[in-house]
Length: 136
Image (tube, rainbow, N blue to C red; front, side, top):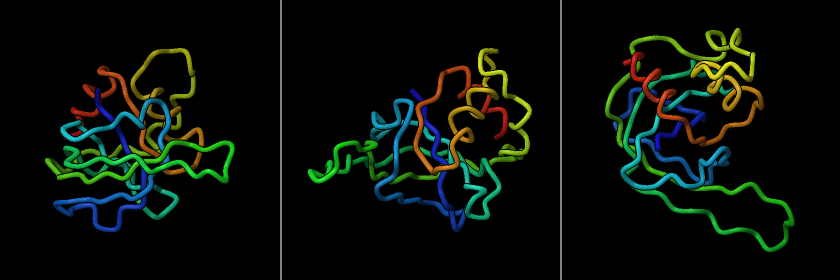
């Protein structure tokens, strides 16, 4: 399975990325070393959407807190960059894909990444991963 992360990315051309305690949704908590991940620089933090593709080199779940009843699973990961995106793909490009039942990769990304403004790690379908590969 492939994954995507939307987070504040200060240096999109970095060779290595470290994300501590990231929220997970849509299967994102199963991310593990060796998995393929697409990095989206969060527009909420001044980013531009898809910036890179990489391989997870380390993954560690964040322990649940005993003082909270409801918690979103969180994970810390390290990623080695494999490629930089050649094509823009962010909120602006995905906004038009809002027919949640059309089965398109663009719609899956819009729904999972931008329906809620929070940064997160998500699981994506093979079809969506193939679509994202065309951006590299």
